[in-house]
Length: 251
Ligand code: FES
Image (cartoon, rainbow, N blue to C red):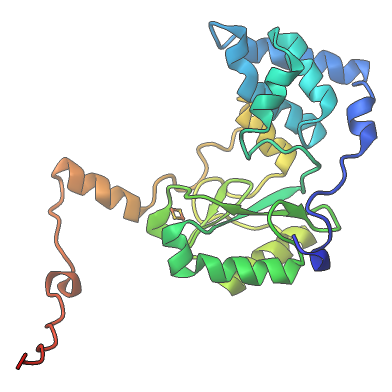
């Protein structure tokens, strides 16, 4: 990011990596790790949810978290780090309470995602993978979230905000920073914090999975057409392409 918006990454506080976990935290982590590992025939397969577990405690993948995963899964720290740096959902520096992702993949981009990104980035004064000074919002450009039928889409801690505009997204980040409740368009009734969301991704339910609307009407319509329950009909505009301009006669 340019100098006007500060450094690309907030420096990792050394204490979070260098200080060992307290006995109490370590005991809880070990208990959760055993539950996660028990879901898989091979220990090493548990690494992805284990990294989410670390984020649910530390707020990002700390050095001590890497060490803990390696010990629990009989891996080297290099192997754990190799995975943690491959996937963008794993943070290597402190993350905000809310990850706000603006989809700038092709469809969302042309439907307004690029404009939303420019507006929100300027409003917050931060760029991709940067966090506001109050530690509330980390802003990300994100790839397609399989919600193209609701483009342009914005995610807050992976909850959907459909059909967004620059104004609605600015309102969203202002509400999140002010601690006001926001309501996703589909799915859970509210947006939880980054650590709680990370614990859910580690496989520990918070009881909110069945809240709200799951698949929306636009997504279900495609399924009905695919199953033959509904006929595919083109809209008049799509069925009747505009008449071509008459070509000039070649002499
Ligand atoms: S392009 Fe944005 S959700 Fe698919």
